Length: 189
Image (cartoon, rainbow, N blue to C red; front, side, top):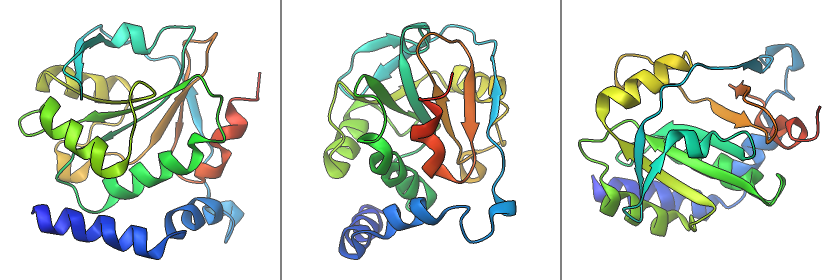
């Protein structure tokens, strides 16, 4: 499994701009195919998450009204869409406000402990404190996905959305495709 994950990472690095191109083209081939982002104010129960450094971070701290936040669900052993999601987040990193936290929340807490998350962060050059790779209690993580209408029953069928939360608001915007709009979402009132 380690070889496969490294192979995929090497493939993405060898292809260089492929993930950025995919982001740039998302929704442009057929503008009618792009889904409109869904904005809503979720009712979230507070929970304790643990990051790649072993630090405990309450969900309420991440979701604080004063924070800009981009987050997605993933798991480190995924060698397909999770890697693409990681590269998508990296591709918009420089285009969003500098104070934006980028969080990847594992949906596989049985395997993704802080050491595994730290290795994933090193492999993908995701630097703390801006990047937070998080894990927690499996039931809490399932409830978090449910509260965002993104729970799909198991990790192999997980949602690939990127969620945007702007400072000054409790609302969350779910972007399911056309990821190039993410920087513009931070400029809208």
